[in-house]
Length: 111
Length: 116
Image (cartoon, rainbow over all chains, first blue to last red; front, side, top):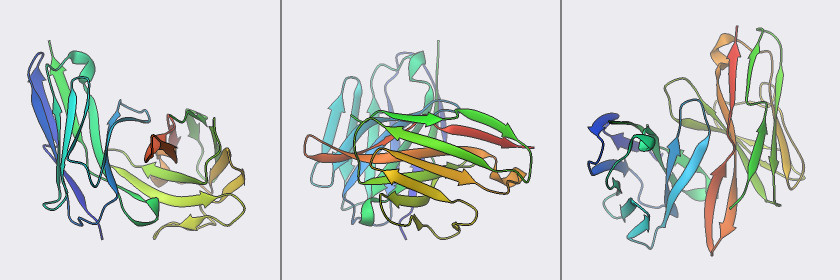
């Protein structure tokens, strides 16, 4: 059974800092990995999608990497802003298009 | 990308009653997914809904408690039946959308349910 873990569970940084969120998964037989953002009480916004054959994806200040063989992904956020404060979730797609979600990292960017 | 509209966005319900959540997609999709997010937890898949067939439920979820309809390729409903406070959660619908040769998951804005 796939298990997805995210470290740290919570993170507080001052504005402007670069930061890294970690995601690990136990079964490397995945089709892709997605990073999502969730604001309190809201739905999920897709940030980046990495196919299993890819190593990284970039969008603006966000960069996600994938090391499928070791079961790890990182989300790098450059020059963090207060508007980046949210919970970040990673999810892997396995068989039958089912997503398995991580436990999330709650990020707070302070002024 | 796929745009998903979910209604209601939130509701407070009495125990023992039922609530039906609607999910509308702006394009035709084969599979729609329903998730539950309990307070402070991550998302758990409830069931997969295909048009024209019975929904497929994950372990721990049953049709009598969470009946699902999928009348066409752009719409689905999830009913939370005979509610108890333990059903208080955010419920989200999701679709897989083919974009640029890749299949990406998109989510509705969620329904925040409180059972009192």
